[in-house]
Length: 229
Image (cartoon, rainbow, N blue to C red):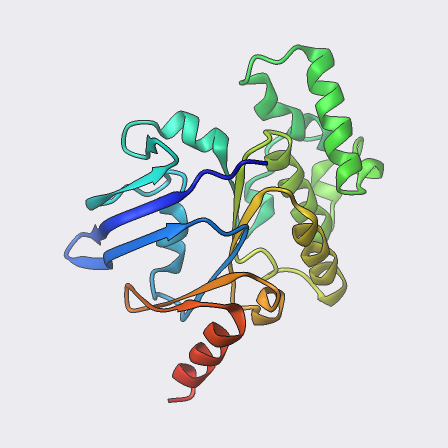
């Protein structure tokens, strides 16, 4: 899968009278990218810049040739987003209906939607959940269904905002395994440092700046040293 570069150019994000991010510039080409930092550091704001959920106060964000300020709709088809609480992302009463919901907006026929839903459930090994009522799912199952709903749209990049916060160890390991298998670019915001150990690149965000940018082991070491300083 061709992965368009993500370019963040001199971006500042200001809420009221406070800069949450200040003059951030990055080019993201890798397939596995982690973002770590303390609560309130700006990492969730950084992640939401990538599909136009947050727009820069200054500067620009480009996905390939598209600019988030001008092309939010096509960008959201390219960049999927899995939120911290999957229950907030699941809106239809039956799992298969929820995964099909976004596909209808793409103009796919009913048969095409059904085929895409079946393919996506099979890819994630959760075909047995197709007819389940969404409200009966466990936390781990909800997270997988939220991922399926995004995957079904066939984005090139998927952003995960603290995806393992609500998961027990077994489900966390299962989720980590599925992310490692994705052909898409995965950008993961997390406090769970272990799931980043094989990532190509990890950004450490501190007080609205990129404090460190490098391989996972070096970035994690930097963050741990900063945390204990």
